[in-house]
Amino acid sequence: MLCLSAADIVRIWELGQDRHPLDRALLLLAFAFPEKTLTELASWSIGRRDAYLLTLRAITFGGKLNSFATCPQCQEKLEFSLNTRDILIIDPDRTISKDCYQFTTERLEIQFRLPNSLDLAAVMTAENETNASLQLAQRCLLQANLDGKAVSYQQLPATAIARLNKQLTEADSQAEILLDLTCPACDYLWQVLFDIVDFFWRELSIQAKRLLQEVHALAKVYGWQESQILGMSALRRQYYLDLAE
Ligand SMILES: [Zn+2]
Image (tube, rainbow, N blue to C red; front, top):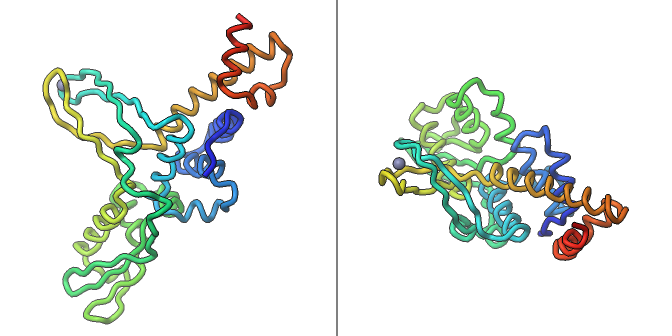
C-alpha cells in the first residue's frame, strides 16, 4: 500500500469531484494499490475496503481523527477525537476474506457472501431502504437449502431474509462503525455512524485546496511548475512559503 503524495491528493480531488462516494472510495484505493485492477478493488467487502481506507488515512495524514457531532437532545456541538487504531477492527493484510459464510434458521441452511462495492452500487437505484436491503440479500445469497434440498431466494420466508440481512452486517463488522458519544452539557448518550469515506474525502478536499494555494503562492514568486512544487516535501514547501512572504 502506497501513501498518497501531494500530487495524488490534488489529482484524486480533481477526479472525484462529481463522483459518488462509492467511486471516491475506489479512487482512493486505486492510488494506494496501483498494481490492483478496479474489479479487484470493487470486489473487496465493504469492511475490507474501509479497513484499507482507515490504514491509508493513517499513513497519509496520521492516525488521529478529529470529528464533531451535534447532541440530538440539546444541540450542543461536541468535538471529539479518536485514533484509527480504535476503530480498526480487522487487519486487512492479515484477515483472510472468506468466500462463503453460513447460518441455519428454521430448517434452512443459508450460505452467503459479504456485500462489496459492486453490490452497493447495484442497489443504489432501489426506491427505498427496505427494497435496497432485499436486493442486497438476494445478491449476496449463494445457496439456500431447506431440509437439504435447494430452494430459491423467492421461496425464502421473510424471517429468513431478515436474518440474512442481519448476518450481512454482523459478519462484516468493520463496515459499520458506531461511536458511543456522551453530551458534556446534558449527559445524553447516543451513537453516531463513523463514515470513513465521507471523513477522508472532506479532509482530502481541504488538503487539495490548500496545496493548490501553496502552488499558486510559490509559482507566482519563483515561477516553478506545479509538478515541481507538489513534488517537494511539505517541510520544504513550507520553508519557501515562509521566505516568499
Ligand atoms: Zn446535550
